[in-house]
Every structure is written in C-alpha cells, then in structure tokens.
Amino acid sequence: MSNELEKSLLTIETGVGRYVSTEDVTYRPPVRRALADYPKRRDALARLLSDDPGQQQRVREIGEAIDDYAKIWVRNIIDIARVDLPAAADQMRTDGGRRRLDAILRNFDRLSRRELAVIRSREALADSNSARAIELGIGGLSMVLVITAASTMYLRGRRRPRRAVSPETPAKAA
Figure 1 (spheres, rainbow, N blue to C red):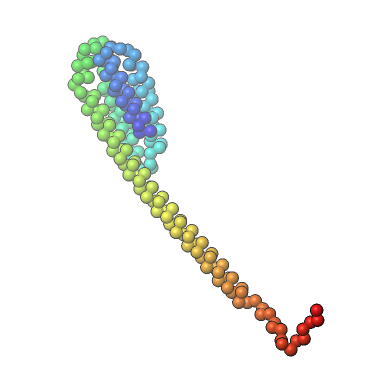
Figure 2: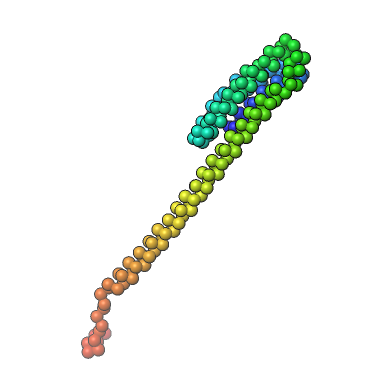
C-alpha cells in the first residue's frame, strides 16, 4: 500500500511536469485523479501498518507533507500554467517541488524500513514459537511412548501365572 501512495505522488509530479513542459492538457486528468485518490490510499496504508504509534505518526506526516505539496506546489503550478505557461516552467525549474518530493520520498523510505524491521521481528517471534511448539510436541509424544511402554511392562508382570502341569498328573486318553 505504501507503494500505491508513493505511485500517486509520482503520478502527480510526473503529470504536472509533463503538462507544463508540453502544454498538453491530457496530463491534467491523471494528476486530478491522483490528487483525489491519495487521501484514500493514505488512510488505507495507515490501517495496514503495524500498530506502532511511530509508524502511524509517519503516515500522518507523509499525508500532511503530500497535502502541503499538493496545495502549495502542484495546484499553484497548475494555476500559474493556465495563465502563463513559461512562468510555470520557470517555477518548475527552481526545483522547489523536487525538494519537497524528495523529502516525502525519504519519509516513505523510513516508513518502509521500520515496517520491514517490525515484520522481521514478528517473523523471528513466530519462528521461535513454532520451534517451541515442535519441541513440546516431540516431548509430549515421547512421554506417551514412555507411559505406553511402562504400562505394557506393568500389565505383563501382573498376569496370572499358568499352573504348571505336574508330572504326576495322568495324561488324558486321546
């Protein structure tokens, strides 16, 4: 989901850049869609992330940074381009938008690294728990086998001995 939100951001940046550089209005609809979609993607990402408060805070910060980027930079460039395309192109060259975008992408990177650490930690715990369960299962099976063997030996020892036929007992006639 982080990737989807990041794609929205890059769609916005690429679309604005292409619109300003080519004057082709067909680049504006994808920008508008991405601007409309990113809040939903941000919220979906927040729901999917770990319950780590730090991660939730990072998502909020990324959302706020994208809001600022969209309101202050993107919409401003689009408004300028409608009136004066060369001025919008000059504004794009100042690289102010790129600095904002790079800062947001660094936040995505931190978010992804932390979530990967959480995933690895959970995997290690799951591996440890499964190894422990296997050990307990083997121990339980061993205990059942020992109890079964001991019970068998005990029961064999408790059988009534058969009476031996005395040599003095006359043999039955056949």
